[in-house]
Image: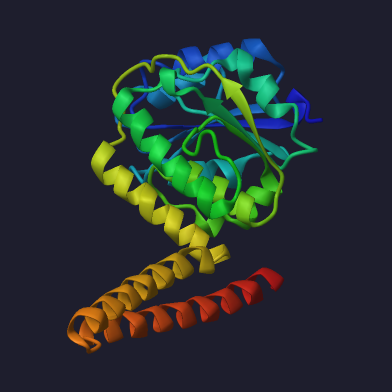
Amino acid sequence: MAEAREVSVVIPAYHEEAGIEGVVRALLAAAPWGEVLVVDDGSTDQTAARAEAAGARVVRHPYNKGNGAAVKTGLREARFPVVLLMDADGQHDPDEAQKIVAPIGTYDMVIGARAAADQHFVRALGNAVFQRLASWLTEREIPDLTSGFRAVRRERMLEILHLLPNGFSYPTTSCLAFLKAGHNVLFVPIKARVRVGKSKIRVLSDGVRFLLIIFKVITLYSPLRVFFPVAASAFTLGAGYGVWNVARFGKIPMGSALLIQLAVVVFLFGLIAEQIAAQNERR
């Protein structure tokens, strides 16, 4: 069981002067953390100054690189074996931090899972679609794929640092990578609060990015979970189209043959990708 003094709290922040001071002060009052580290991602406001005034150690990027890049900097700079990641906007209750951290040791990652009622309707709907897809691809129920409130074993997170994007998708990537690598992942219910300031996530463009990341990570670890359904769908459609044409016109159309050929090619590519993934995992 992890204790607070063994934990580096890492908070990526970009233009969060309105909420960062309150977050840091509440954290320091909640438990004797090893350190509270704020990574200022090139803010031009008072984010860094207010974080320092509240008692945090601050590392600054010279320009804005993205939320994921700030998280990667925090993981590299962290001084303790357990890292608690949380947002700077006040959505995460510092009083719930210790229940996120405590199971580390038995678990490699503990994620604070929000209820759909605590999220904006459009975002909750999008997250529900992504979570269903990710749960099917990973064969594990995922109640919250995008929560930024999570504790991890630092050494495990450093193993996948090269996979993490620089944008807003590090929670999705790290969750899927841990699950597919066979690490122990626990979801703990939390209560999300109304954020301070304006969200920087763009629903449409970031939603597409999340979808691509899901397929990227699953293809990296279990390619046939992606390739086989595509191959099976193409084969079923081609065979069905061919049977219908034979029954009605007495011949097999070119479209049917092409779909069946496509199914075979996609399936063979899936097998090759599966072998490559197995070799990478052994290394």
